[in-house]
Length: 114
Image 1: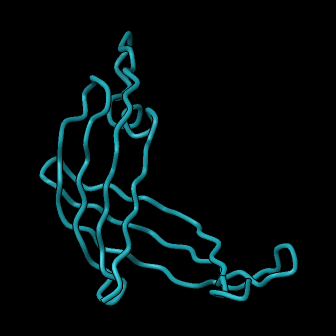
Image 2: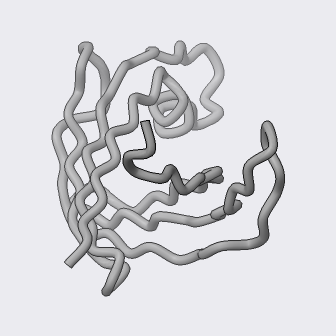
């Protein structure tokens, strides 16, 4: 079974969205967090964990992850063919649900050959 591990550092982006509610005079606290994802590429499901790196409104959370997306095409980069992969991770935890969108450019690298 193939497993993929993605760690994403988000600098204040999620905190800004979660904290700003439109109340006049409210200040937004910037916070650094780490998101650790573990999922199976065979089932497109897995688990995730949020760990605060600096003080702020977001606390530790964890839950289930579902992935949707796939290869959307290919392109040439420096004479090599790469696959364009677009996906969306939906993370559901005790404190709510949020979605991460991403685009990956993946290239096959031959082993050996000097």
